[in-house]
Image (spheres, rainbow over the protein chains, first blue to last red):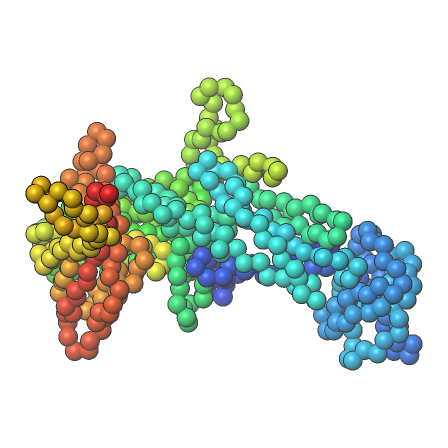
Length: 360
Length: 158
């Protein structure tokens, strides 16, 4: 079985599993909880003889334990460390041992013979060339029950840019100073054993935002309040907030201005528009321009968004929001790897992320 | 279908003299903006580096008795504004932000880029730490003052 991730740095917005926010504030911990499970086992405990027998239910034994070695066994209702009395193929027979309470019928067994056991996690960012780039490795030793916490926030802080390069000349643009997509792979290792890393998805990412949240904030360190969602035929969608510390920001005509927002993975491949309504001093709506379509190629990052500008003097307030009808937004891309000059492909999703170069 | 809040943005058409336009990284991980105008004072603060006494052998032609190896200088600007109480949440964000930038070409940024395209030039400033009033009940406006430390001035060194 190896390692499984039991908890991701994500939250269900409005407690609804349809709305999963994978966007976290990088100035706080961003923890993946992992569980080491060497072998899944079926458990039989004889109350009279006090002997525990554990059958491996999936895979075969790759270790070579001996009588006298220790095994940690955990089921849903109990756990304990047992000493091996004897072995059959894929079966551990333990020394008699008194158990407090009852043991569940199934669980997992971790061998203490795997000395110096640790989980190695590779943390990848995505560079300007849309390629995974190794930004760090975390080495974590699980506790006695096989549980480990891997915090990736400090690695992501290192790749957040510092230079503000937005030129206020396009409707929307991703901004590397405000956040970054990332992903992880992991492997298990122990003395004389180096495991293979788990796979690295080329489409599914997680995200860090260069934000600092406060105690008692909604969703804690998760940015769920600010993540836009779209699910076809679902009408009750949470309305994402913009990343502004003003309740109502002020636009000073003639000066650069943008709104920052999370252009989430939920909007990849679908048309998204900026809409505005302008109001005069009496609160009467005035004429507004047509909705402006965002560049979908900038999705999956924190973006800067221009407002319409050029307001006549009677306009004193504008309301800005994003909307979509879920229409596919297909973009023509020059796919990497093609040798024919000018060959392009129309994609209705972002191009897959290029795997990282091998680690030396 | 609307997928975000409707964000109210106030539009301030008033002409501003002596603008100091700032942007900052706010706590939520976005950029915010504010324009200070009219009320500001710019100062330079200098410090001598390594004073030493000259060993004078030719009194007749000596031009001094002591010297310094250089001088450090830093400019700062004291800005002030009368801010609506409702805007103080953002101004508090400015005061608390570790990353504040000042627009250096406010008159020409819209055409300073190649081919007359926009190119704002930002310069890092540091809001001097201290305290400001962020809430006072019963009033509509709060008088805000803050000092912006500008980048060091480079001078000749011996």
